[in-house]
Amino acid sequence: MSVRVWKCGPHTVMLDAPLVMGVLNVTPDSFSDGGEHVDRAGALEHARAMLSEGAGMIDVGGESTRPGAGDVSEAVELGRVHCVVEQLAADPAAPPVSIDTRHAGVARACIAAGASVINDVTGFRDPAMIEFAASCEAGLVIMHMLGDDPATMQDDPHYDDVVAEVAMFLGQRASALESVGVDPGRIVVDPGIGFGKTLEHNLELLRGLPAIAALGYPVLVGASRKRFIGHILGEEDPKRRVSGSVGAAAYAVMNGADIVRVHDVAETVQALKVIAAIGRRSA
Ligand code: HH2
Image (tube, rainbow, N blue to C red):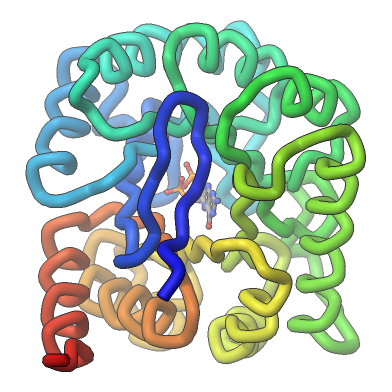
């Protein structure tokens, strides 16, 4: 059996078992944990806690992309994330650090500071982002968002066939990156749960993960604490959506996801360990 790997700068990330990516929002306004990790020491402490709980990667973000979020300048975003990325990446034994940004300047500065992955929720549509991706060796997460603006993406989203359209977008963005010389082994694709999608679109995408995986790239799913889980559960408070989020992550992994982006690392790791044990066959 071939072992799947993801090339992320100096790291080779093994994807023979699901990878849990821990979310570190260094923002005042993220939808579920805004303001909790804005001081540097607290952010680092939270990242280290997630690593000890089993996260295989930390995704650091300095701009909320929740529906209706306003723009943040690159300078402000970078001011929030740069030191945190630098300090997390300074430990040679630490797993890779991902920078969650749609701004090429922030990506460039954070890769220089030691990050190994660029997670772009706009799917590498900005020519400056494509140019930078081609010039470095970082792992690249291509995410689908309807339109290119979180402020308006939830305004009456419409698709004729959400799974086919999202898969086509992801395939086209991956081809655009490969056409400028990006090694396909650096690419991961993500259907962008909640980014310009109704509840039913999100559910169709989770059911349709095999069609996304058929593109041939590893698949990342970020369903954690999102509003569609709140809709299903009738739960307004994102922090009270943990069990629902673990359920979504478990389903995603069983239906083809290689990486899950989560806020609640310990709970997710526990569920995935049980799934792995049940699925394991003795030779
Ligand atoms: N979701 C969010 C942010 N970045 N990146 C990827 N690849 N996939 C996702 O589903 C995804 C993402 C939104 O979650 P969060 O970071 O917790 O919230 P906010 O954008 O409000 O900071």
